[in-house]
Length: 203
Image: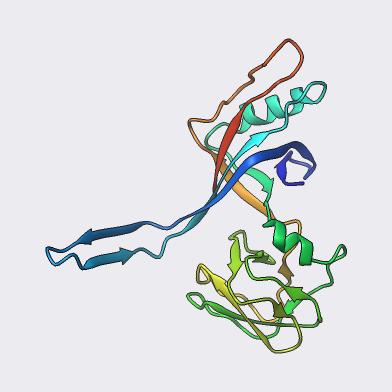
């Protein structure tokens, strides 16, 4: 289950529904007098997660300390939520999949191989040594040698041939939004319940 990691990569708080994963890509639009729409879209993009947190009792102190010390200025790592349809298609034990050719920054295509595993459309992925999260836009890519995988957004930096593709249990570095509680809120004398937390991808 997706949630917030501590500094030892252990989940200390699970996300609960309702949960929203939003793509934030600045876009400006206007309508002319003839009602033609003019749209301009920037290349910058980040993922934003808004979710409830499972109420905690005996383990609440770990989350409390983590949120207070990280604040709004330090990175918080989370286990990225995947679409439920994606989780149904991913194997329980994901085999190693590598890129098989250099992919340059700005490209929306990556060549992968070494497995017969299906990478479903809508699956979040990232590449070894890269922090940026991408989403697969090609319908159910079979990761056989030489398969082309389309991604969104375009690559922010080069991906070397032989780089590992991470497509399950993905860690995303985030910042906590300033309207999220940096502290603790108790719904009674036992359960700490912070309600909704908002996190934005650290890019």
